[in-house]
Length: 289
Image (cartoon, rainbow, N blue to C red; front, side, top):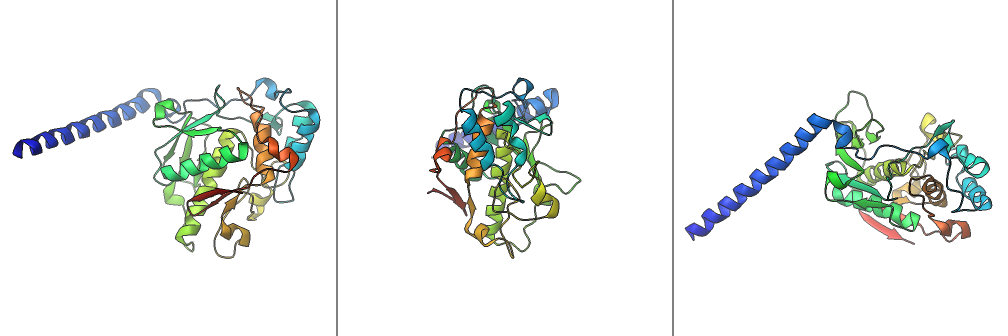
């Protein structure tokens, strides 16, 4: 029996040494090469001159998709019409970037304690269901990823999100406000921002109304559109108390983004026939109707 416990102790000690070596290698890698090669292995990109693939949807279908993204005063984005008129995916004369890589699948690895692994998998499943195909995948290592989701610190009041400076998708737990929210509301709020920031990584701009999608944010207006300004809690929209739900706008937006990728893909085609499924997330449960 003593021999067994000695062997077990040796195995545990060896496992701890190996874990320490890998952690040290990751830190060394960051010191040697910087965050851009650890947290963000795929550079933000767009097609040449913002031109999109014209073979996946007809001009009439593109016009239908852009119309769906218009939304209302505080939802949608009216700045994407050039996709149907000039076949360019731009906003304010700037190409809209994404992190999809050449395979057309966003590979994510999470080290975040704020956005737990189950939450990341649900956010990936949310977008996969909206798109109708696997376009987001959670991988087992930073080396296999396009981006790493992780926590950090900042001196400003930001809660984090998609970064474009080589630091991947980063969140700042110290700035996250939980006062006044139930545990369920807090979880839904975190999932909403995670879904939104992954949406930005896919190349979807903010969908909060107006030409830039920023109307809602500029006046602090809470919306039921997850790519806008979504929040659940006291005195918020009753619809948001039931959880996060996808809209035809999300489907149209991901379809437009998909034709701007390095490996363009024809996505969310059911939205063109008004048969798009609704994806729901509420307190750790994902359903599709």
